[in-house]
Image 1 (tube, rainbow, N blue to C red):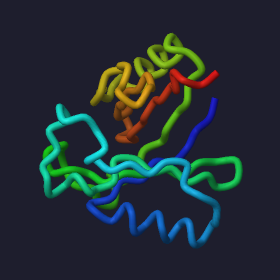
Image 2 (image 1 turned 90 degrees about the vertical axis):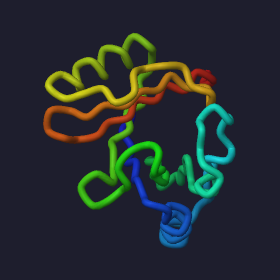
Image 3 (image 1 turned 90 degrees about the horizontal axis):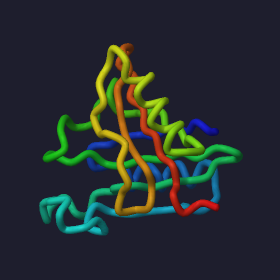
Image 4 (image 1 turned 135 degrees about the horizontal axis):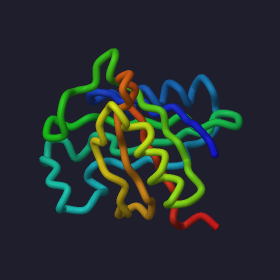
Length: 140
């Protein structure tokens, strides 16, 4: 089990993560734009260069982030620009945790298998904290 920080930006994710890399060193474990996603995501051409997901290992932790899209809701701003990412060990654990976290809050993306090979979901708890659950289905 692990918890990581996930940051949201309104178009500045790449710049921010280049800065964090200059501070902490290391190499990006992943760097994908929305243009790398499948066409059925429906991303406009002018937003395909935005960052869909980036991860930077920092010590024993991982700092992750993405840009927001105009078609996917409200732009990132202080107060809604982060989430806590939880890595469950099984689908059953993911399902149980998202149900408990969302009690009194809301599930914004139900647990589902994704095109990037994870069982993934998102919710907001009753305190307004955003959570992401990501089970890597390719991990052995």
